[in-house]
Length: 231
Image (cartoon, rainbow, N blue to C red; front, side, top):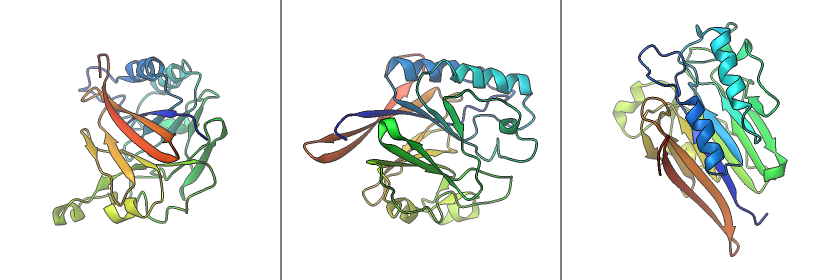
């Protein structure tokens, strides 16, 4: 594949959070449209908790139907897949895939020559989002989604949902879309591009990831976007 693929990467919308002024859902969709994204990745904590009403959850799902491109959702620790999860109570439109398998799941986007992999949070217990990630697949572009805390030093080892830099480096992915942190931060390791998009609601930011092959060389670029404004 020689074309360019654009992925809008957003996370931590925290819909239902009592202190949030704006969930940012409409702005994320608007940004995906404005920047010509070929797919939207929502990397966890789309909802702040599973007490969100079904009506509010359905409103978000219906908002995603404005897009005519694939949307892939990875449930995080706030909107984990417990029996009463909001993701089990809404009807998502045809363009939306919610990753549901506890062991991790592949999502194939053949029109984009992209294969995604992610492990959702099944409950409130601890887990390692990238542990045991399967080998690289056959599609040109291999992307992982992971909602957790990247270990930067010894103090981080006391936290939950740990992602180790060596797991990023060994993943063989072209890009790893991270969620869980409110701030945007580059977490690339071992030649694998990875990063937090930052919170779409709390900080009004997301990331536009461009995958391209130029003169036979893979290029992955990440541009931070300010929602509702210019880049």
